[in-house]
Length: 67
Ligand SMILES: [Ca+2]
Ligand SMILES: [Ca+2]
Image (cartoon, rainbow, N blue to C red; front, top):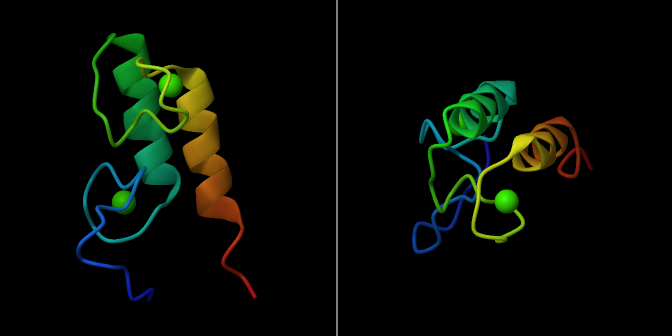
């Protein structure tokens, strides 16, 4: 469990369960396919949600906070 800062919505946490996991990446990918948009899903802030954003969420899910 991570003590996320409540003032800052977790970027990439698309199902709002407090963690970034592969499930969030899948949601971003579906958003990319359906051309949907969410500021939380737009990881690189280029104005659109694409498979690249999904990949960045997947990378955030897989590492970074292990140690
Ligand atoms: Ca999540
Ligand atoms: Ca993007």
